[in-house]
Each structure stands twice: as C-alpha cells, then as structure tokens.
Length: 133
Figure 1 (cartoon, helix red, strand yellow):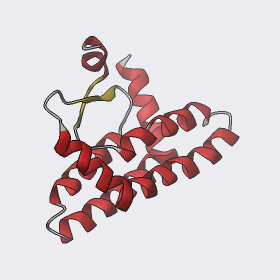
Figure 2: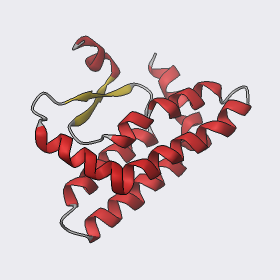
Figure 3: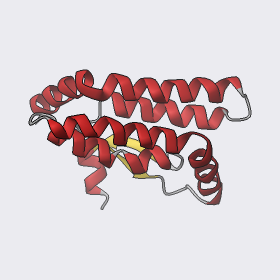
Figure 4: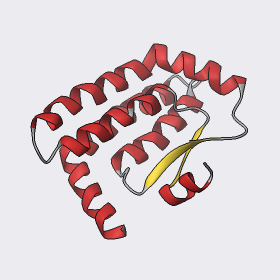
C-alpha cells in the first residue's frame, strides 16, 4: 500500500500538486504579511503540505474546533478559499480529459471542501482518519 501511495503521490506532484501547493503558499505568504491573519497562514501551510503529498493521508475535524474555527472559515472563504477552490476546479478539468488523470481529477474535487474550510481540521494518516469514524 505504501508503494502505491508513493507512486500516486509522485504522479500527483507532477500533474497538479506543485501548482496547487504554490497557490496555498501564496495565500499563506499574504496572510503572514498582514500579521492579523497569521492563523490563516498557518492553516494554509498545513493544507499546502497536504495538497503537495495527499495520498496516504486525510483530514479530520479537530474535536476542540468550535465557533472561532467556524467564524475563521467564513472569513477564509470570502478572502482566499474560493480562489483556491476555483484553482482545484480548473485544475481538475484537464485531468479529467486524460485517461491517467481521471483519478487525480476526482482527488482534486475532493480537496475543494478542505480549501474552503481549512480551520478546525488536521492532517492525519489515512488509516488513523478512518479508524475514528
């Protein structure tokens, strides 16, 4: 299973992972420059790492996330989340047009909810994420 995840991650990296991670890094940089939005920058960096190497990992909601995470996610969607979600959508289109890219197109679409609401989530190994459900 680890070999399959490694191969999928390498293909993902070259097909779309680098470009999408760059989008998250730019969002993080802007958040760090604005100082007040540093928590958004930290969340953006966490998701950038996940988007760069997603196979074998998943995101789960943190049990201690509450109203502040919800309010932060609303602010995030307005200023950065929808741009990143649009990037995932646009990136998935050429992937769907190629035979080898179809699974990666689906993976890109599955990342849209995470790009819209990154606060209150953490990245965990896939087997740990499914065990909690």
